[in-house]
Length: 354
Image (cartoon, rainbow, N blue to C red):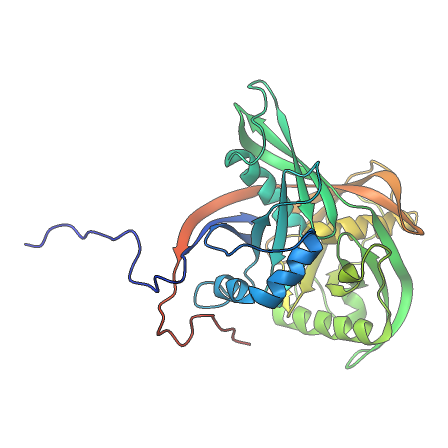
């Protein structure tokens, strides 16, 4: 009788291509694949320069980790890099199915736990109930506050955003298949168009996901074609990331308001979208629908998971009146993996189905 199967540390693979070691997490159902080892050095004097370098020279890493057969079209990732900011504990580049995000709230919530648990920040005192993790995102420095016990993460995480502001309100766009639609555009580390799903003939809580994706994508393309996006700090941040369809319940209420975010290449966020919550809070504050430190709950129509958010103080971003937004949510570990490449694999860099 054969003995027990002995599993080698790694199966046969191209010795010239390092294995990519990752930790997988999720925040409210939205995945995050954090690269531990195997990514070549990302070169650049600033984080935005590193983002450009990775897009130009290391995009195969993103495709191998995000695309099938190792990932899927809605996978999300993070590559940790050094930061040029003295107050940052770590820098991060965000990966999606299309490219490189400027901000990701669900990832920040997960990375707060990860940084504390994997020793990327100084160990907090044994009696500390919260640890600070300063994360340099492409949009700027974001402070995460991680609930902890005995020096390890436990419970929810919250973060304070970069200055969030409104670019346009009641902007009329011509959306193919839907006619003229009024949208708002706001920034929470990334730019989003916001529109009530009802204006597109849909119920965000009950419509089929593919119908919501099609409608949101049509809005995104229309806004890109008809509205000039600009950011006072950098042209690298001046792009529309996606569209968030809402239930239209923007006036303050203790009950959660529901939304779904479709971003990048029709990627669907399973969480309520941390940077989207940030932008939506800024929009509601701008419209006088929300006061400082008034907490709202935001529910994902995809999974039912909930983030909370509030505007904690006023700020400026260039000439824009802005707010710093606090977003809270829970992240969980799901596993670890090592991904390899065989040199004769014609699909080594992955593929996507539409």
